[in-house]
Image 1: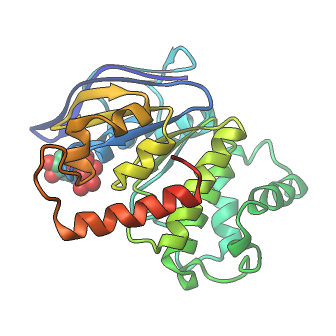
Image 2: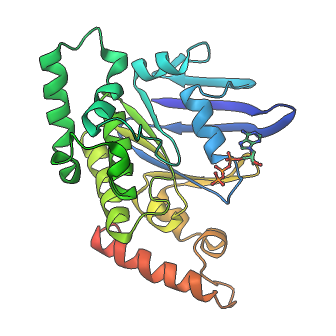
Length: 265
Ligand code: ATP
C-alpha cells in the first residue's frame, strides 16, 4: 500500500532522513522503533506531506504521491495523528469529528456525516457521552482517542500514529493498542511510531528500527522483540548480563502486564 524508496528529508540545512526505504502492506501494523531524535516524527510528517521529501519516492497504491499536498494525501486515504494529539480544545468533540471529515465534505450529506460520526464513535465508548463537551475538557487519554477518531472520520486506508500512548495511563495505553488491533481487523493499515517498543513490536506485523535517520534493522515484529540488540537498547533487558536499571524493569513489568491483557504475546 505505502512504499518509501530511498527518501531523504530535513529541516533547513540539517538533513534528518538519509535514504529511508520501507513498506506498509494493506491492513498491516508496521512499527517504527527508535530513540528520541532518531527521525520517526520527521518520517511521519514526510508521509503525510507536512514536510516535503528532498529525494527518493513515496508511493501509495503504486502511484507517486510526491506532488500531492497534505489535504490531497488525506483525501487519498492517508490520515496522520500527530504526536501530542492536537485536538481543537475550544471546539466540541462532535465538531472535532466533523472537521475530520472535511476532506469528504462534497461527498457527505448532513445525514451521512451524522451517521459517519455514529459509526466511528461506536468504537470509542468514552466519547459517546461527551459529544457536546469542549475537547479541552477531556482527559489526555480521551483526547488521544478523539484524535484517532477524528482521523477515522476521513475514511483512511492508512493511519500514521505518532506516539499515541505517550503520557497516557496504563488503561488508555491498553485501549490504544486494543484499538490498533481492531483497525487492522477492519482492514486499515497502521504505521505506528511508539516509545513503548515492547508493545509496538508485539503487535506489529513488521517493525523497523530507525537510528539517526536511517533504517538499521527490520523484520517481523515478534522476531525483532527477540533480537538481542533491540532487547538491550529499546527494552531495557540486559541480555549480555548487565543488570537493567530499575525504571526499565518497572516499565518491562508494566508492558508485560499490558501485553498479557491484550493477549499480544
Ligand atoms: P521524538 O520521539 O523525540 O519526537 P523522533 O524520532 O520522532 O524523536 P524527530 O522529531 O523526527 O525524531 O527528530 C529528528 C531530528 O530532527 C532531531 O535531531 C530533531 O532535533 C530534528 N528536528 C525535528 N523537528 C525539527 C524542526 N522543526 N526544525 C529543526 N530540526 C528539527
